[in-house]
Amino acid sequence: MVISGYIKNGIGGGIMEKKLPEKIDIDKSLHILCQNSIDLIEYARGITAKQINIIQLMTFYSIGKWIVEEQQQGESRAKYGQRVIKRLSEALTEQYGRGFSVDTLENARRFFLTYQDRISETVFRKFAVEKSEAVFSFFEKEMPFTLPWSHYLQLMRIKDENERKFYEIEATNEAWGIRTLQRQYNSSLYERLALSREKDEVMRLASEGNVITKPQDIVKQPTVLEFLGLDEKAKYVESDLETAIINKLQKFLLELGKGYLFEARQKRFTFKEDNYYVDLVFYNRLLRCYVLIDLKIDKLTHQDLGQMLMYVHYYDRYEKLPEENPTVGILLCKEKDDALVEITLPEDANIYASEYQLYLPDKKELQKKLKEWIDEGTDL
Image 1 (cartoon, rainbow, N blue to C red):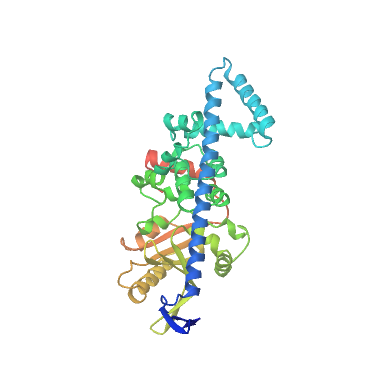
Image 2 (cartoon, rainbow, N blue to C red):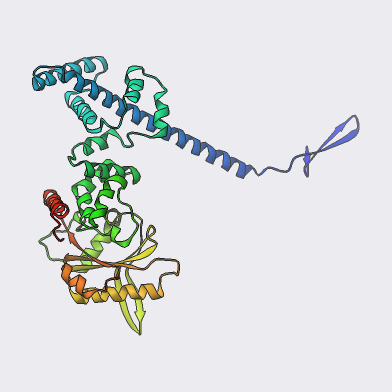
């Protein structure tokens, strides 16, 4: 038996005492065991998922490469090329059943043509020809493909290489699902961010994605609110717009971008016995500052700008901590006037006006505008 950390046992009339180790906290020990097991299983599942994904993508890449090489041997490339894919589809379907339709093999071919510079001939031979497990050592150094096949099917539809790279980086870094990727593409996120930046920063979107380093990086032109479900032609007031945003807050945060934390709606502050209300208050943890948003359903006025300037000054003087960065103000308005903004606000004001739209923008129109701006230097 155990008595106060000792074993007491009578043997032949004698008593033997042996000191035990200190009592183990069973609950804590079991908790650690459970947590370690969960962490290991999550890690193992993550590794397995990544390996399955890269194997699938490398398989499509390799088949696409072989299709292209075979098609190039034909005299009549178009006619022979279609026959190659059709015959291969029939053979693979007979062997494996579903999963290798003509459309799938066409996509495999396009996948190779789109990303052929990603895989060296050495890696291709290790995987597709030698079928060596040593190929995974290459992937440990640098993973050539970071997204599921469904995402690449969407990305391959994007003709502009810089735009395609941007969405791949963002989808990877932000763990976008396929629906989020489609929404961001359909809302012309790339063009809207590019039109909000200086020209020398546009190329960084394709190489680094949307990196947030200064207040201008969180502004989009325009802000798209199609998910609110408001009718463009219907009459509504600012409180309607605000309520719709709060009801779809998760989607609004996605539209705003990275690093946003919601704090309050209609945040009241009092100055000299007068009450003032900020429509929406956020905090951006990447910029380490408050972001105040005011909603305007009509054309932006100098009074609106002056009001936001007062809000920003109040937060800088009475709300922000010494180690935090200056407050940013964003006016979401139906119509803005860049000349009015420039002449009304001080040059160093962290205040920005962004038009909002209740429908998805015309992507071709934004692409045209971006091209004109970059090539010809037209003003926004």
